[in-house]
Image 1: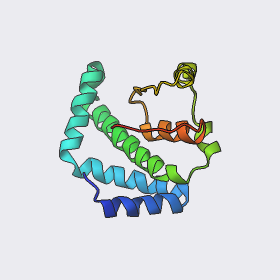
Image 2: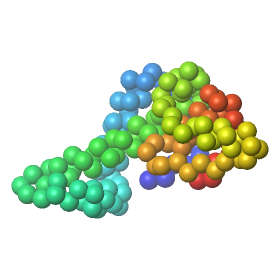
Image 3: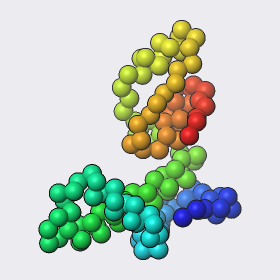
Image 4: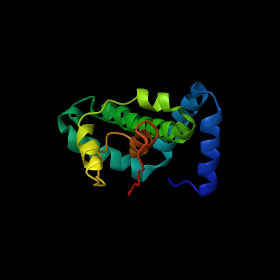
Length: 146
């Protein structure tokens, strides 16, 4: 499913100005609809889940487990969008409180030596959050290539 620029701006406006319980509830409803209507994405999620834990999807409850886990994938993606759309309005303290950082001394050392380090971030969350943290909390200039 693709969002137009206008749709993305509208979603951002809503996510940033509606109370979190409303946006969270709305994201759940949208994830339920998307899981039902996005056949190709649902099948891709099923294939990926089967590859990562094939033993989970064998036996009598296999189909039920798979449907449940696919829905969790769609729920997670919807939460990602809500969180990302709300990110510009979060305080620096709110952004900073969500991070645990290891190895930052290497980045600091590179910067102290006049080297612009390249960070390769694992895909365990939104890179937008890392960029916002580096800029807002650490005060560093960030350029992102996605």
